[in-house]
Image 1 (tube, rainbow, N blue to C red):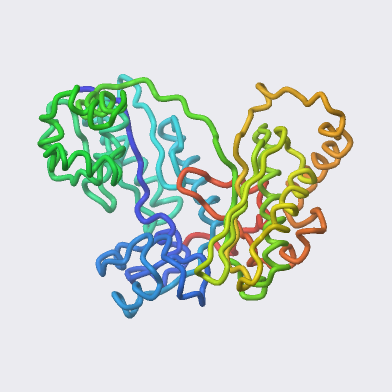
Image 2: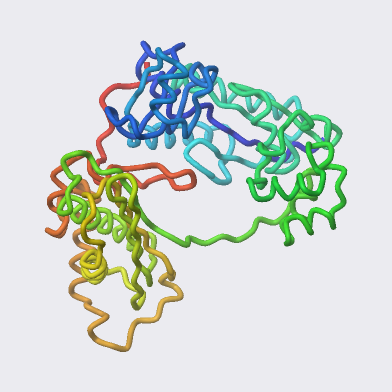
Length: 421
């Protein structure tokens, strides 16, 4: 018996948080959307009542209404989700140390040796569930997997959703996972799925039966070997990862669907991205902007520079790119900014050219960051983003799959009023 890992996957997290804060939504089909009144957007979360009608993450709003006529559409409250996430993590810490947070709704921990027996491990998992129900509320549930390695624990957490608790030990493999579809397995995306099918690996039994060398060939790298070992509950050293991009994208609200509004929103997002650069200790060597004009025409441009954190330098580059945008096109309706070629400050060498090292301006921006952390990101900003700063719907906080925003770096830090019922 060696249930070394506990994996926690919160069920329909955004939707369940909304149901917890709004009792009238409980038991009803609910979909969380980026903004109300925009039928061209997609659902970013759905309650299990909505999932029963085929509504899921990525379903278009029109399709969701067609599939489920009585569905409740709720505008996302990202600040609330981040705050509840932090409360949940703190509660789990009361039982077991959280080794790593993988996303807003997924985290895992390592079970101490004296907790790895199935009965003890399950008692600890039930203790976590009870604590969440008592302190947060019964609408927010978590599915828990217990297994010898993190990979199997994650798969186990998917087996009895929602509110499940599944133990998978060495003796249970591979039978315990044979009901899963290959597409549900972490690390098997559409490209690998097609390769597996071409190799006549059609289900979990086939995957387990495949030789390690065959999986190496299918994946085309050591990742195939890692999959073979992981499926057998063997614990492998983690692969070191590093941050590669920082960016923001946003569908413009109607008031800002002008060339001036799109330009201002790009600057607002760039200034947010630069705050994150400085907070995380990175320098960016490439700026990419992308614009969608009138839902059909997409345009992108990029420029390179000596790695910098300077909002002014990157803002000037944004202006140069914007000046070369296509002519004779409809007004923009979606914009995005991405900073790439990131260099951590521990590896950064300052430029030999004085113009690239404006020390006083960087000190000013660090002071601005400190004020914005204390009073909100709209307190101090450069004027080229003013038009977008006046609109609370422009470039609001968003939660990406593997990035949980730091509320101190966001423009809107206030959580909606009210406590979980």
